[in-house]
Image (spheres, helix red, strand yellow):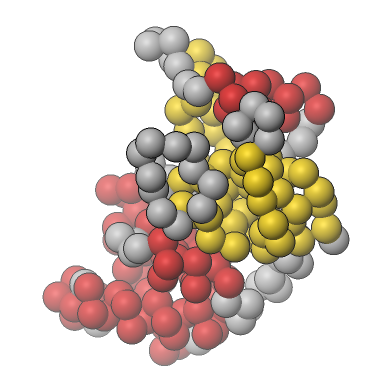
Length: 201
């Protein structure tokens, strides 16, 4: 399914299907975007920034992201709008451009949600690793329902929280096979967190 002229929210972070992510909204164009989404019961897409140029509006983004729905909102003490979004499904961004309000919008193709697949024994360590680090990250990014035995779910959660560059995250998001994604993550986690993984064996 394709949608046209969908608002795109460029970030250095990503939330994926099943993830819960708090955002602080303070720019007028994004405040208006959020108000429109709430009013019309629609969502927007979070996409990864390719190059962050400080002297212009961000329009250089990677071609995969996640369609999100707003689940909660409130006015924070500093006057900034706080919202919580839930990742709904992966999207492929076909094209994008800034509109007259300098809000990045684009045409997107929705990806079908990956089927639940029992995580192979080879990658159970990744599930244990995420369970270990989750208490330290849950205030930044969390989830709606835990599915530690599901290959897609574990892959999405690790893609969200690992300290990876946007290019690598985009490759992981673009990967359509949950086991292939876990294989890539297994190599990354064993390289970056070798001692922590050894403790979990």
